[in-house]
Length: 78
Image 1 (cartoon, one colour):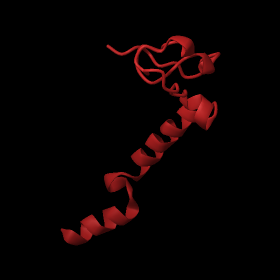
Image 2: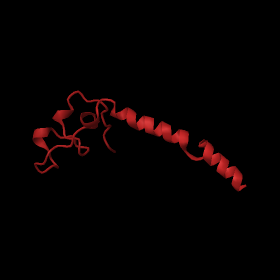
Image 3: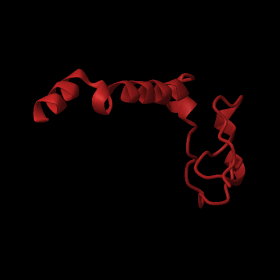
Image 4: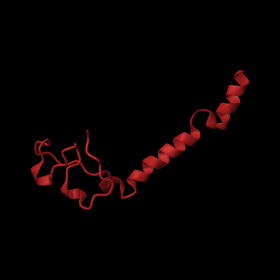
């Protein structure tokens, strides 16, 4: 089972986020000396997790028969 992914860690720059090992930057086990993978908060900002929630909400509002154009189209076919 995968470890729980922290949404806003205190010091994300100290850890490689590339796999479930969450290695320290100076002791990466799977990186073979390459650069570490940044945490999404470092790349997208502290509100990165809210983007996915907003996208899911918009998708649920616009899927299938909740779209008025789709409802009209389905009624015409019947």
